[in-house]
Image (cartoon, rainbow, N blue to C red):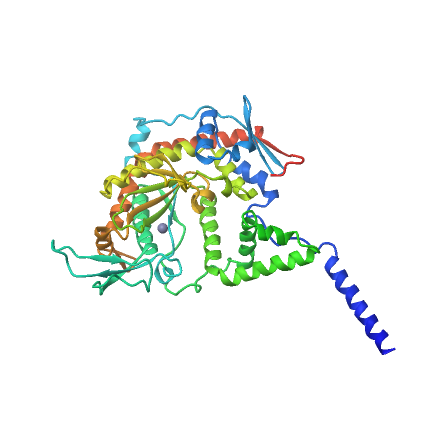
Length: 478
Ligand SMILES: [Zn+2]
């Protein structure tokens, strides 16, 4: 009697467990795409610009070296079609793009005092500095040894706190925080651009005073961010895909939800960084920026290296185009028609930075043999390269990431440690002012093209409402 009792109870428990595991509707994997499929039509429409066949093929060549995106577009005599997941967007061709050289009219002369009036520029000081610089891994202690025979000070820049300097270099000169240098450069540039009449926005405030994670934006949700990470990661990670197929489905959900929670707990810093990158990129859309510039200083393993690098969007290898969100970013960039103007501004920027920062010429571009380079020269002489960076990938409109002086090149290290300029109560080196001046000169040189782009886009979006359309495609796997 007692045994039967236990057996029936066990049986009941078994049935209940089976029902719980097999219950339908519990098998939704917890990942969520950065761009949801139902956001694709409106998202692509918002980015469409005055495209002509020539602009289109230039952009395709720069963006898509492996021909992934090329398989998602179809051109005809009067339009181009974009296919993604269940979405088809049809965009009419606009007239050919003519980038006007200087037009010496009454109007342009009257601009002299208000040269950049009406232009909106978004400045993105790269990385958090201040008390967050160590968490950002952009924190470089500087050590000095005795002067050499020529009387020059020997300096060593450590890649992080705790990295021992070479023997004999015992004097700590200070610390370089890339975020602080970027911030100072952006603030000085903001003033210069505003003096020239531009409307300027910054993606962030002054360097944090309390260490990470204090001061995180309250809108950041670590679990939500971990789900976005999971969605991207499953395209690279076989294990994640295998887990998602576990049966019963509830087991798969439990396993993946656990990954999400662990990620949210252990990778807070990197998740916050991804969230912050999206926030900064989204600002460009919100203010309808004519130009976004992300400002950086560089660091190399070899302290001999010191040259300018300007990165523009593009060079997306197939392995970085697997998710629908990644394809969305590529297609949106392709149809927004801003690649030619971005190339022009990128060239001007590279030339102005070389000249005003008095940077040495760079060695010729040589990709490492056997491995695929992460970036590709668009104009090696002007130091303009295409690269699929987080900020250049997502930011709509013309966007560049500027890499200025190398912080661990000894003459630069000494310059960058100086405290010549006061900004909001803190002191920064004169080099930041030279950097800001270089960028200002390039923006002024690009002013007419930026206006031309704005005008063409405004005319085009008026027509787009009548002619463009999107519809649901059947059976496209995206
Ligand atoms: Zn940087």
